[in-house]
Image (cartoon, rainbow, N blue to C red):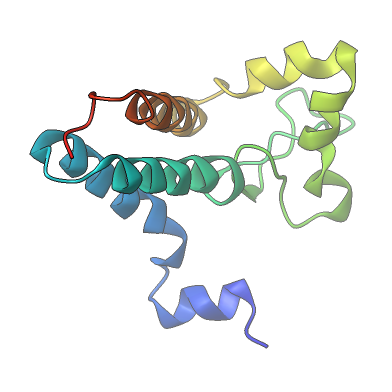
Length: 138
């Protein structure tokens, strides 16, 4: 069984960036108008999933003695870094009502997180718009 690290090495480290390619194809599908709604919805879903579960961002999980949080690389906006306690800390923040505000502020904590957050929200809006009849040419 190949791990994600082994897969990324086979692709020269570009395996984690497939979402950017999907984003470019999504923009091309909107500009071209030849792609149908199914293609736009599919690409929107791929970009959305990449942003929230695989995009390379900073972990920012709470760490004792550190105001700025964990500085390890993380996979996506909803997952933490390689440390087991950090893996699901952000998902738990969404469930705990008192921590939702802290989670939302972490989405815009630095430049990478802001770009990935806006990409995820844009792909979500793109998928919703593609479901409206007549918006995407058949």
